[in-house]
Image (spheres, rainbow, N blue to C red):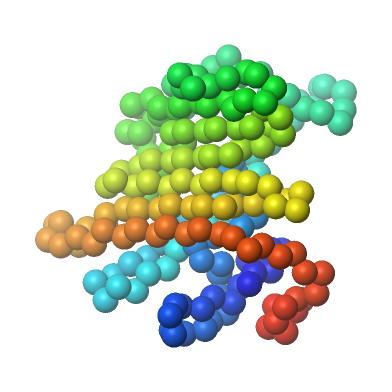
Length: 199
């Protein structure tokens, strides 16, 4: 159970683990992967694992000189950080899917820290213009992917996958962490289902 306004959640470790008030694990089902955000993940040799996103700021493409309308389109002829291409299965059919692959330029990767990761795959529904799949890649085998669907008219995360290898100093040891989360049985109650999530 999660309160989406501030990412306060009740998380139960299965099958009979602790129940704690913390961040939604591994992310809120309303998380927008097309945004600036910080992904925090910790794992250790005792199998303690925590993952959450925070500081989410949606991407903005405002043109202050353009008249304000109800619709907004973005036309891009060049991306500053990426080499973009349509994937072979991409379609511009009204009931199809637009599939774009993104490859960061080498100079962008060289200037980034080892904790940075980059867009590498984007699939959008042509009818709704909403993303269906957003994927990222980074150093040390980092992979982060989010799949979306619509439930009761609400665009929500239906699946998230995260994995990365973390190394001890001098790479003397390593831990490979995988988080694979499936979201289902959504409800959107007007009142909090637990008093600990009351505002």
